Length: 236
Image (cartoon, rainbow, N blue to C red; front, side, top):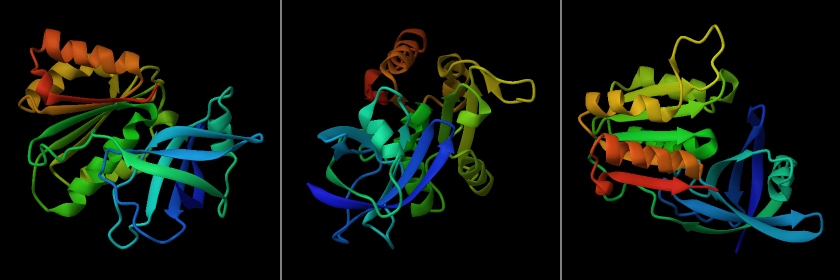
């Protein structure tokens, strides 16, 4: 276990809090974009531990720092405790863990599909790739949420899409308001168009199990995808 300290806490949406943390010993966390960690903290007198995906790429100038995104769950003691954290608070970490990374296919085009805080590890992959080289594979982020208020990191993704021709940001809302002019419906409904227009890229999927299973089924059964081109991570 390693001690980490909260550097910054901010609301990313009405129900999601972003936490920027640093390893207290100043040593690098040493993770690959897409991996996750366990966080342990005192929840009403009981030590509890939960896994969270790292939502940022490694920072060369600050390798001890990382970010996570935490959804507030009213009956979830850990999520409520994390939402109550402020700058300077400390907790324990172990990890990183996981194989949901692009290490095996770094030069292949990718369609990144996420819902809710499942966008976190995908954000880490996007940040790392776009910062590492001026040209390379095409990346498309298909991000599904209920409303515009739920679009985590929206300004960042829109700015990256303007700055990098090889990155596309494709948000889709299941409960759009009258002002919304983007895609509507679940991420599964957007797959056929995006897969074919991008030359059937590798697909990286992160979110709740029902969504991940539906996306896998659509890719394999309706679109004839090889399972080796589908990479998934579930967080429930």
